[in-house]
Image (cartoon, rainbow, N blue to C red; front, side, top):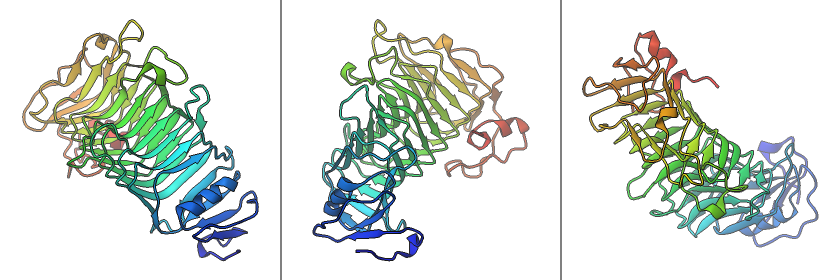
Length: 394
């Protein structure tokens, strides 16, 4: 049935699949389809082609939805999105809301996921370790109340390449808000990670299992886990993608983010050549950063060659050790440069594993409300104009 839709006046051929099942001919390239429940969503996806847009009407959708082998193209992805972004579809309960299996160039946009016991959304390569799932994009999502305790992730990504997570809010999870195993060439930006009481929240963002070249940019983290960003981790050898290398993570960039709280905002873990720059870190609960080795050094490189620069750190008496250094690591290979450190309850200088180059000590940034998202320093000291999240430029 062809219908008009005021938000898509320029789209020809908007097809409505009514609840209860629908029989429809092959979907034409570029066609837009509206569905009202999980069953008709499955039917629409079975015929989707590159350029298909599937609009999800407002309402409650069944969880435990498995989407396998759906493929758009780089130039014409398949888009699954809310018909009305102001009133997104709601996937609630079940073990997990949606499981994307071996899908390529699919975008999920404007949806709410809550109350899942295992994971919120899961996307993987179907265990084909050398053939990643490419071009997946997750945008404008709300994922909340997942778990609540144990290794249960809001967004679990395994074996993804050329992926994106943007403009989404994560609130309350068990393991990681975004857990990446063997993921490559991705970006996570403009998201909010909000810890919630009653949830174990190990990490907000974790890149492990051979993950490389991932950018975590311009996100807000508040009380977002024991390690807000875990650069690396500890992965079973069978799960590395495409194969076991000498590191859990390499070439990860954490930049332009704003952190409030957490036990340690940053942890480098069995990681090499990872870069943390232009972030604002407010009142960590125990450490500013950690340098750890969670894989044996007879198979893996010692954690090494991290860079920590142009960050603004405001700390208080809860921080007694600034950089927690574990055994079998190479902290002497790290570079600390051009960071600004301010003790809000005293006059202490940071003690770091190696001498810092051109650090800025005890200049009050004069943040109007330091726990507010991306609060900007009001100080007239020009040295602080070039550090922290407010100074970040891509």
